[in-house]
Image (cartoon, rainbow, N blue to C red; front, side, top):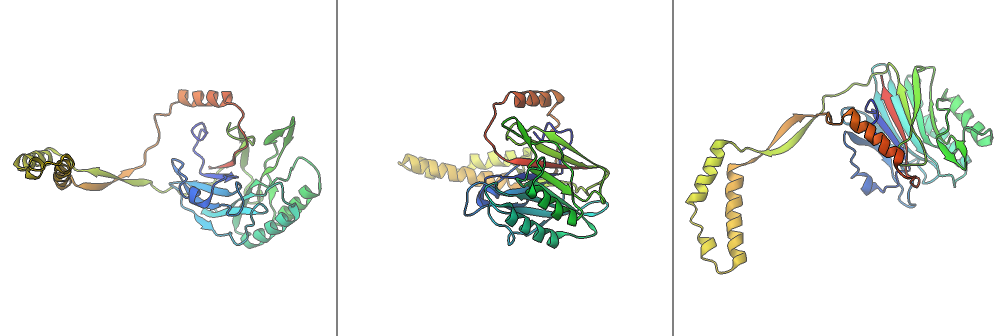
Length: 308
């Protein structure tokens, strides 16, 4: 899905990742790192997390003391852009819980995070259908309007019983940032459509991404010395032993000792490389494959963020 995007998203917000904390710490997504997450301990499934590109620096905001499993699950980060500081929150509420408790915790969190000089963005699966006029929607809008937050996604993201619903929401302050676009991306993995929010003319400082790789020094001189020392070995421990296992262990230990001595391990610094081998044809084939994939059971919901 990420490879099919014309540009690699800077941030990824996932709701209902269904992972425990120990599983989340082992999460690997090429090119991205885990910035913030909330995982359930008592109940199964649920949870939210935010991933950022490896070349972007951000700070996690600890809101675990506010989180309540099923009722109000949230992850948040702070990110400095070229023009302002941005606070991004990914939120989830289970449809089996009452919205009043959720809205109270949401208002409490907004009071804690809201800053006049910072751009606040709230996204996630709130399980409040914005396409239906009811008290839940009105109460949500009242709270968001208090902090000058406006919903920017307007299209259905989930089809159920031939009816569209909009329960994955994105709220931000359009007075601080009005040049945006919101697009849909059917990821083929969930019954929810992913949303791509592009913040136009906002730049994020990108650090030069480097990484270390373990390698060995193997040149002509070291190979010659290695072969010479092997020829000089008498191998008494190999030939004199009547135990095959003992003979092999002696041979192996001697070989490894010389190998480590002549070909030492070193760590070299490399610059990160992009996957240039992923051609336009491969991307088209991936799109076709996703179109043909069978409908799967609900997995996670996804929000992608692009800058500039």
